[in-house]
Length: 230
Image (cartoon, one colour):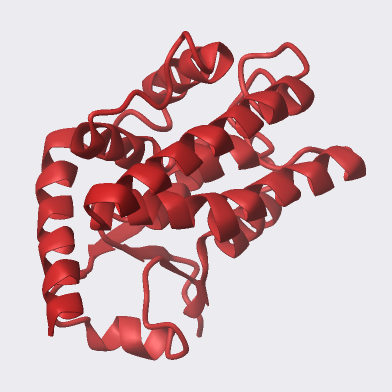
């Protein structure tokens, strides 16, 4: 007999795992959390549950595994439909939220990653691209938020989770590159949104600690540099 228990396999530094944790918190779902070591040996359960990508997060519900953070958000929203909605109810608003979440993952994140891993002109160029992307997302906030506190309205929603999960890594990029990316002078609405997002009850206990992330970023950058030199 399948179990209805919920398990989430994640890693403390993963923005994608954070997405699933926030969504489960929004829906008040009790779950077991299993920490994976991203730099060490991955567990047999992770490799079995996500044999294609072998990455976190993986949500296991009723003994059935589901990988990929945005798919997990959709699943959580539909299965626990009695809780606060994560995706917009209007079909157009829902499609636009998905569009911007795809932009964050497929394009904008590449620059964030580069700004953390690279040095010199490569990091500088990537940091500039991050800033340009955030200006676009400031405009998206105006369009999607419609004067409310979050992209999703008066409560955290799908696009809030998609972008907000990277706030800790944005701070790391700022520190590594001596830059100011989300700031009142450049993106005033995003600046206020970020404060509200981090203070939300569904977020504050799972938000990445910046100092610990920075140390982890140093390790990643050193590994990346060594791999390019070999």
